[in-house]
Image 1: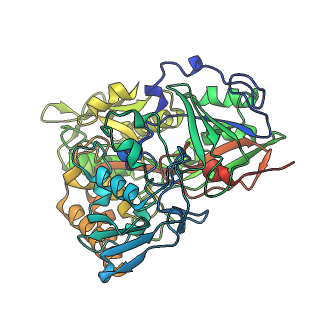
Image 2: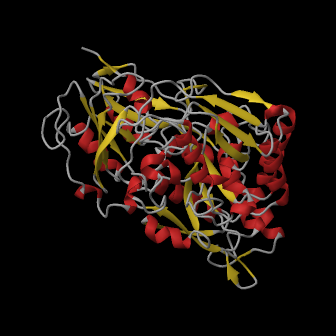
Length: 529
């Protein structure tokens, strides 16, 4: 989604095994702390920035910051920095929030309405490098009404606007004097959240301490460490050795902890999908017949069964099968005969080597996946195997994100996206032609007028029936001309030492590890003893 991504730690560290070891949980070593109050979590990636002005925490659950609103365990909106849900007037064009009393930033300065205005104005400023600013496209003006009221005026009624105000609020008195793109706030943030950043060793770990003045009450977990470990196997090994209290793991590795005493496995459903981007400008991957054939050639259920160990669902589009906005009847099984027929009709003829060609060009393209990500690797290899059965040669290569990013506009990538909350979240940035090639937005450079129109209707209409019809049309258009081959929706798996209670999971977006996971509410955990 997306959504500004959190870069895979494979791009931040050359070898996951070289990541400096944290002390054993509660061991009082390099990470310090007592076992009853300290938690060390292994995650595969780290953020590019910790500034919400550049997109960090935009979907909520940042431990350093709070938004006006937040989501509970059932993903329902609830007040956070605001006293209550917004007052909505003027036919859905005006949203008024009243701030909670007595909230302070971690440096002791009070939160004011001006801080909220500064946050949103800066995100929307064209000079700010926030690739998610299109998600606030409806905002015409943000203004303070005294110290404790914030009024948003929208250009058009936007049904999902309240959910966008989980965006973390930053202090103007600190960030206001800096360039939002390059300032120190990006790595030394100050917020109102339950935790305060105490250190960030890039490619190694981030450490946090409980905010003693947190408006929601002082957390029982006094120290939180996020250890950055790109390699799935290394993360599992360190968890098994006791070097970590918990970790996010792919399903096959999480299953190996199933019978471990003292550890508990958590499974979160998600909107997180794996797909192959098929860049429009690529002479093979951008061909509609090739795209349609690949969509029919893949065996999605086999990927769920064999790669995800059953912890997921086939993906026939960007929305999961159980989503209320999912278009009924677009499910489609593997059909190699139909895939071959489509290619035959389009003039892609099979050569002696079994690979098709058209006008002297072989049906061949490169598919990149980020190194160290076993789940993406397995998806890529399965995809290539299925494609070859239809006569399409997909050459799979692993690389760091530094290598992949310059190639994304021309080469296919095993991508991951998915946002929760509303179909507009994620779909607009994934598919709208105005965002083609804008960083990780619309990676496929997809350009479909019918999809653009549907995205516009879905964003601007407040009539649920009109929105439902728009997103139904969008999903059916993606079947006719898929700019991506959607493969699977992945359940997120976590294993943690069973020393705390009140751990729960939410339905999660693609980005997880820091904001999502059983630690989405770590400030509310209670010791079991």
